[in-house]
Length: 280
Length: 280
Image (cartoon, rainbow over all chains, first blue to last red; front, top):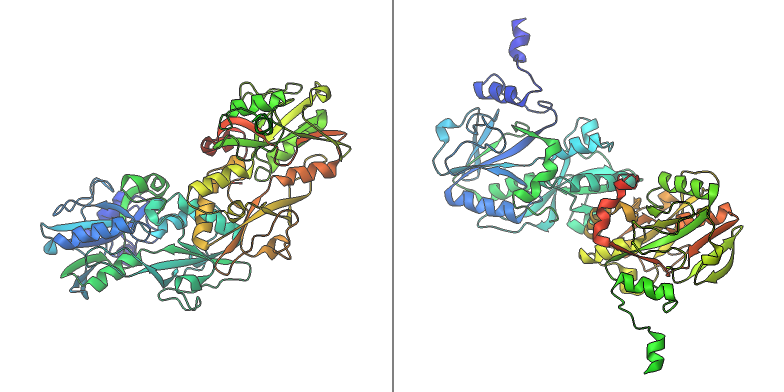
């Protein structure tokens, strides 16, 4: 069945190296959801020169929304901390290219755009902590229902750095009180993927007027016996970058993440070694 | 000023060994609040024979309300895990003696009551985690106001063991959402002193009809920008023992705790080694 083989290229979908090889060769150009289970998938943001230096500072000042897993040396496309063979110019299935803050194109490879002052940033993603929650017996409704997490703009301001500033974006997950406590306990151990929540209950206190109307994503309800729990969201740096309008910025396309060799279960050790504040 | 010297015996109030020596000699018979700061103070419960065996099982099955720090060998008045020189017959400033569940007397020494089938249990106390909260920058209102913590009977049933059973008693502390999250993170590290909360928000879900009316202690308010946070309380085992009516039971008198040599800061390692479940 050559048609089926073309739709689903023959590679070991559980092996992160095989996934990266398939992405690199162009055999896999789709979403990374469900690939390499248990493995860290990262948000990607690539900037040049002074913009990259300011963005690094922005991440360091806002470790909860911008948990920096790794950053390349300027001009170096490798991220050996995340995977020995990783080449950031080819290992993301689909890139978005922004010029002056405008989305110009989506491409499968950025070798032709790479310059020697480019820095690639890999940021932690809530996929990792959601896996830990589910493994810990805490059901996550939007995952169970196959929906996107609900995201909201808040009145919490990020700490600015150069041109990067703006409101913190949060994701919301509803839990019973006992599960909310478990979720706080579990995610507190993962500072490299947003860590403990930033808020619980009382959405109006962080500038959310109507919880049923997320800014992005799907509202999955908050039942009478549940509390809404809010985590800092990886959309925050994307929003800050879009508003800063750098001449050139390259990111992953939504859902088309960088697959690393790191295990989610190892992330609990990461926060401090990257200089982010696990208690922040 | 001999009068002042008599009211406040001359011993180093910061040194737990000096405190125990003063208690043992009868020089100090008062409360232990404020003595030996940073040091673990424990709840004490002494039972005989089969009652002691069942009580140990009750503690093991209910580690959040009954966090067992140490238990003596039958007939052995020492608790070397807590302090090398400790003698449970003399080192509590004031004991309560219950016969068939009735309070019979308060005494300063129990050497005359000690039998060779007696087991002394030392249980963790929320003083330790409150110190950790305050050190972590999370204000605890009833402490700041010099009041007792508010305690409530709940609809949460303890896991029974022999004659010991009954509702979980909880203590309530109000916090802003951000401080509630910090409080959960901090206390989760202290399974040996009740650990993470058992409930947050929504008191009606655990059978508390009117939060302004605690069963015991002082209600210090829950403001519009606060959530009530509920921890399993060390009064739970006292309540279970009182209802079981053992022929003889000896406890510390309220506020007259056992001062150990252990540091509060060391408690974060304790939960697992005593067999209690830090995630329970």
